[in-house]
Image (cartoon, rainbow, N blue to C red; front, side, top):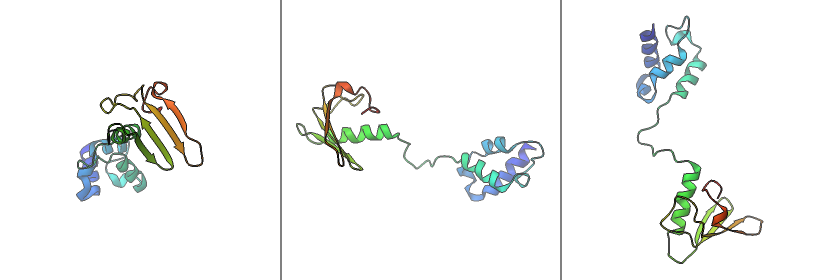
Length: 136
């Protein structure tokens, strides 16, 4: 029965049951001859349980790498008017000139970007050549 499977999943998760979508686990485990978690191999049970872990409500929302990059660049260009913004990470430096400090929807088409990587010359390009944050 479904309720028996639900109850056995809930008992197996114990004090951490609230961290899982038990209904989804039951749906994935349900099948012929499966009345409880004893009818499912332990490694399959824990794999399915891990797939249905609920997000931590106290954790910050997931931010994509592109959104994180956009936010970091906007922070860099917003530091001091008239001063180029500088973004650095892992041997990559992006120096940004004339970027709008207000519009962060797309890279500024009037800005100039200087991209430098370790052991390479700087590459300069205009913002009109970079229509999206992902391309930048």
